[in-house]
Image 1: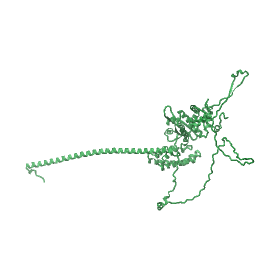
Image 2: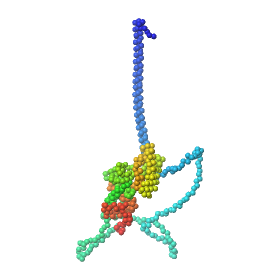
Image 3: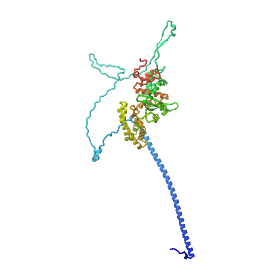
Length: 563
């Protein structure tokens, strides 16, 4: 209802105005109170936001700590796995079999007959008894008998007659029994007597002025040396082939009542090494001239004057030519590229090694061909067999197939060997490579199986290179066999007395490895070389190397006092 202000009196208008002003004040007061409440609510919300922000920071920090802890736990789990793997390897090295033999799945090729059984037959757990009968032709094995004794050995015949009287009896035959015996070693003294002669003239007073005739002394390895050629050769052979340290040989001499100072024997060995230096250089050149080499290295502890109470860890670098049947060892103080360059700097050809990174310098971005070793690949998966048996066994089975192919082709020509490898081995390797590529991302980076895969795939092109030439080998086993005598020797002499002594050891191991490759008696070869090397010039000394020398000449050689 609207009011007509014109009809109202002044007092009524004033009263109405006061009423409106009062209502306005009440409204403004109410609005002010609401504003205060809103401000209080805003402050409360801001405080809540701050609390939530702080809680978010605390949660974020805890999440980061949790993630860090989880990463540490995973890292520690990896470390535990790695240490367990190392412990397992060490236990195997100490107590396990040294043979790296793998027997494939015995159930391979068995048909799953359960697929064809009925539901009732599958549920029936009653054991079934079978009676199996078969016939087998048993081959009679003839006993090979005892080993025969070589006919060229000196023979002592002893005739044993019956104790009874055989007078008037007829001999109808005889029984012969052969026994292998040994004559104890003995030292002999060779006394060289050279009579002196002179042509006596009529005037006997002038005898002193006449020409004196006397025989020439035979050429000896070490002039004015107490030891003869055979004894010097025996000392070298016993030290580097039989692994008898020189102090033990001294003990053997004492059993013959012969006392030789250790410094004297040491000087003999050093002088023999100096005498054979030119022959060793000729062997280095002969091996380096080959176009296919296998390389490996092994450690040797060496006494060093600069390292008190410690030995220096040196290395024998080994190089082997399977085609030429040559091997050489080179001693270096380290295992770096500079050490490898001492032999491989100008080498041109194919080089077969393990996965050691130093060798990459000599075939990456060069004309040289690199061949990897399948035995090292196999070894990696064999180590992973205990943790991942099914997958590791698959790889080992495929590698086993490759070696069966090698067994088939080993007696064939080079061309036939290459042809069969490309026909049979290449498809197996290609399928194995695809399978490894699929498996690689599925396994933890630090697991033994993943490491084995990475080792193989990183060397994959080099693993295939043996297919390109029938002369190439699948693995480095041949050179590892040449290193084995050094490992045996280390257990006996423990260390080399000096760096020069280690170099001399490398020389002797090289010569005797070549004798083994060429099936030459090392004692007889060394006797011949020591007696005759002084008669050779530097440009002809290579003729004395085991692969060049006449075997009959060595086998029939006699020392000057035996002629």
